[in-house]
Length: 486
Image (tube, rainbow, N blue to C red; front, side):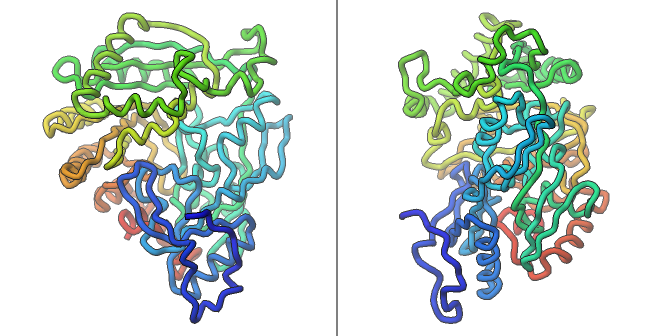
């Protein structure tokens, strides 16, 4: 199907004419495990966004927002809704190389931001594991990165944003101007309005390199202790776990601790800050094109294969890579998920889902141990498990706690879908018992009562009040919002 182009709905007799068939597309969650048909509109201006909102209200149809479609589950899906895809609104409106403040439309990607600013010595304070999400999408999900303890979330570095309400009104929000709505919009997964512009504070860097230290961990307890000890001295802390290992080896893995080089440590900062020094390699081992690498990975993407891959990875990290220290470019360290384009295709035909739990520090080891053991008992160990350290933030529907998160990837097959959704429920229950929360950007299967149980201080009631104020006709929704919020 050819890509749709922005056409003003006012040019169509909406009382009679059906919606254009060429706009009807099947929209997938990034994990490819859930999808829904929708009428996709790709405006390039604010007036074009208003046209879509007006069309939806005239037709009595919902609108679901979508950036670059990087949420794993159903955040950008809604059956037969108008899908408002915003990644054509990607202009950088202003840039101050002295202060590091960037003003941009919400559809600009993280890649476009860092590539624009790095030559002036600035890097986004927080980035996800891939460079392709949009700034607006990151704010809507309040994305975190590998330095969440030190820098918080994407929203912590937003200075101001413009919010287009379904009524057509634009409000400019900040911590000083309509602070309640500002803190409600960030992390609201697109339910209060359309973010059309944001001012974002970047951080100063003296080099395009990081100093990275790889540290093996023999079990879950050691993994958590190393991560907690490193949070004050390292800018970035991220751990990989071998979820197939059990017994005394449960939770074994490797952590990567990284810091920015200080002024004078990089002998050639002008060179390492150039874009060509940050570009990911075109080939693996100088031979295998990145574009075909996923095809070589796919034969291993099953339980016996991934058990072997995880075991080999741990033993290599515990011998050859033990306490290794090496330089790595900012992009190579930050965007590991972009090394192999199309790697998610190794999970076809069923796709994958991810479950990410956030647990207060005192309870983290007990909860994560229960989760890893439960996955093994059910015969569904996670193919990829990632640990991070977090701090709380002031946003209304925040997922963050003073503690740790554990993200678990699972393949979806025709025979395991029901059991896998049940597993997610059972993984979530000890998280709630410990006072934890979950991450909607990664979710496809969490039961609503468990999501809501994470908010015990009136957050959901205050959010409902903001929804009544900003979108009383309930124009903005998504399958995720319908499932988790009702």
